[in-house]
Image (tube, rainbow, N blue to C red; front, side):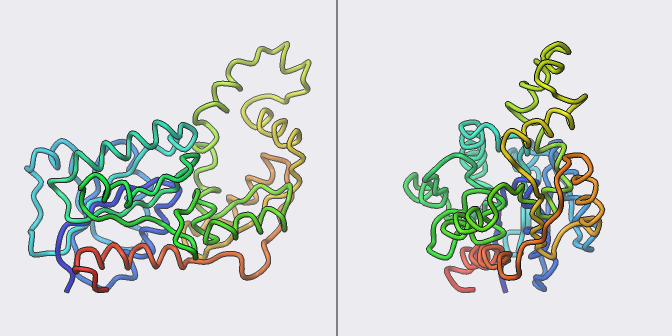
Length: 283
């Protein structure tokens, strides 16, 4: 039986993948979600899939007042701000600081996030180099870190390049991307650039009203024509409705990826490795 404290640091764009494995895992476990303003999505999905959980503040965890039974299997989930995908340096520093701060409260770490612009950022290797607790992250078929959330759902690396060749001019959409579309596009440079536009500039550039008008303009500049549906089979039941709404808002037509592109292997592999780290290297 698995025992020990597993700390999961996750992005909302990949919480479907985490909840999928927690729901499938028949081992008894105590799941605790840190309340930090980024936890609404994961809590809703845990409830949807009937995965019991508790909540605690990060302060309580760090102070030790939220102390799990060391003989049990405990999963602590810390969600990060989705907007950090647009700020690679801040994403990296935030995750590394959390990892260091949580060292006394974890036996192993699992990273449910993409490296998002931090090329070569192998978090488990960084943990090992710095004498930190063992860790695991999403990897492609060759063992390289998956670049981002799309890469996680197609097995990353060379597969990503193949997907781009096969579907040039497509906006890739999987369930969490459709659900989190507004949060995804509200972060970082896109939001700042859109907010800086005057009415005169919009008229001169031919940009329609609001955020949707701005995004349509960007997509037209990039010669995007289609939303590419990557159905992982996990996540929100309203994927079809969200996808139709996204098509209406962006002006892009929907095309479904051919069979064989989507895979949950990196998802299954990561969870299995996380448990293995608690079991002394045994699944």
